[in-house]
Amino acid sequence: MESLGFKLITSENWNKPDKTTVVLTSPLDYDVECGYPPYLDRILIPQLNSEVPIEIRRLFEVARGAMVYSYFFYPLYTLAADQLFRVGEAALVLKSKKLGYSKKDVRLSALIKYLEEKEVFDDEKTKRWEALRFLRNKTSHRQDQSIYWPAAVLELLENITEDINALCPY
Image (tube, rainbow, N blue to C red; front, side, top):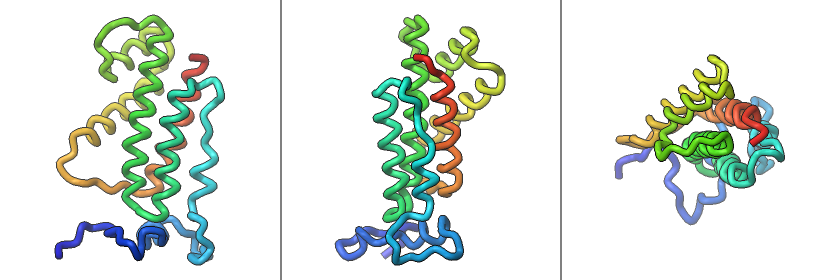
C-alpha cells in the first residue's frame, strides 16, 4: 500500500501522540509519556479580546482546538491554519459591515481596500492582510494535501490574533 505521507489513523493508534508532531514540536527534555502536547501553552496564550464578536471567537476556538489535537494527528495543523484564514476573513467582513460597507462584493481584496480607504489599516497592516488573502486563496484551491510546519501555524495564530484584536472596536 502506498504511504500517504502522514499517520494513517487506526483503532489502535487514534489516541496516541503522532510521532511527527512529537518530533517537530518537542524540546529535548520532553517526556513523551506525559500526554501533554509540547506546544499547548503556546497555543493557548493568544486570546481574542472580549470585544471581538462571538461569531469570530467561535471560529477562532475551533482553529485552536484543531492545533491542540494535532498532537494526535499532525495534519490538523494544516486544517487549523486553513480555519485561521477563514477567521481573519470573517473578521474583515464584520468590521467592514460595521463601518457601512454595503456592496455585494465581499471578496477579501475588496474588503481590504475598503478598510484601507477608511484608514483602519496603515500600509503595514494592509500588507499583512494581503498576505493572509494570498495564503487563503492558495489553500482554497489545492491540488494535493499540504502539510504545514507547527512553528508556521503557531506564528500565524499569534499574528492573526493580534490583527483581529487590532480591528476592535467592532
